Length: 309
Length: 293
Image (cartoon, rainbow over all chains, first blue to last red; front, side, top):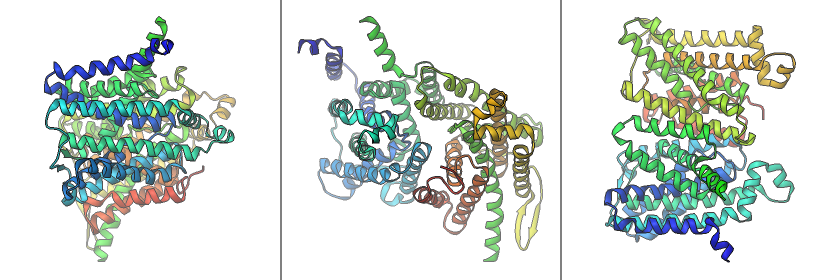
């Protein structure tokens, strides 16, 4: 027990969460708003990492799942009188169904072919949103009658709580046998099958988990923003940001996803005066990190910490 | 009715030829070095925008401007190879099974960087280079601009040149051999680095040509880079990764499906049928029309 308490793996996250939890007491609403977005983004990144980092599937369609969750919840909220939490459940269910549809080809296809199918899923979803603009609000988006909370600290705690719970659940999954088998099937599917594990079954599970968390995150994001629009939850640019955040932070690590997402969103805010150039600068930074530190920020941190001990 | 059909046939011909050119470069790169270049659209757009800028702001004329545009795509292609692809290929810190993922992510990032820079310098309004040929032709009641006709012809001449180069010249055959077995080629005493130098130059040329012709036919801006990459990707997968004839056929399928939809249904739906066909093909025949698994 004392051994466990001494391990930085356990107390560091606890300290970090405690520090984040007191932020609302001395931070302005603007900064809290930026972090709130970053926390939801961190969950997108974690769910993407679960599929990509662990099972090695290059999924170009995280926003297909996020977008389904977001629009499922938003459409329920504008068209029915259901309470907000039921709308979130409905949105999540939509995302999981979408994930199962996507998993169909995923179990048959590999590598670039799979990547393309997921990419196409995002393109088709965003086309549908534009075509059925009468229901979905099209490019402008859908304004929602309800929001999670009207206070910035309320929203901040919702996002932080959600990120922590998702992070803990996904860490447990990743460190369990499921995570190990997924990692093994990503590296050598044939050998994993030979050892008696059904690669198909575990990949399907990874898909369901990934779409579950993406769906909840997407639904909660729109209830924070008060609007669902393709530019914030579906567009390919969002997909790219999710990929950048995960890879920057370091793959196969939940903490890495969080660091990457917060860095990306905060850097985007700081570089906002640069206008269109800001995306290019963030991408250039990410490219440099990938070329020189392939393990991302978290990999560097882990190495520094490891060297000291 | 027959009039509309002819119009579709003619319009689809030129746009599909441009698609085919772009996709040919994309598929050759994949066939020889296994790189899926997600910055493909951006490399095309560089050629398009530089050609437009040279022709309309530096006043060097359309032909010289287009040539400079194509050359700038070649330069970008080489930069991409030497600064990103080659270092990753040779890196010892990246595990072999992860290289594919790294190349996908980094080329995606390169695409975003190019797109952002172009957007910043030239703005996001679509630009169209002046037509390379003036006048129109009337054919059975259908009006075809000479420009469109010439674009289709140039695209096919370049594709013919590509076929001749790969199948009939010694250097081109080395490229073909490298796509089948790089190790075999190296054992025959051929320097593989030369193959790569050739490959990325050829790729830049093809992407540049496609970009320049696109700028003259439909116009281009930085924002369409992503769509261009996605369409090249779809065409190449539909035709079978690595197969040049496959991507030609697929380019025409996607090109005509889009043109038919644009004329008969609505321009807003142009990309949808192509995407559905693609998903369908992947379900039934994952290796594409002409691909080997």
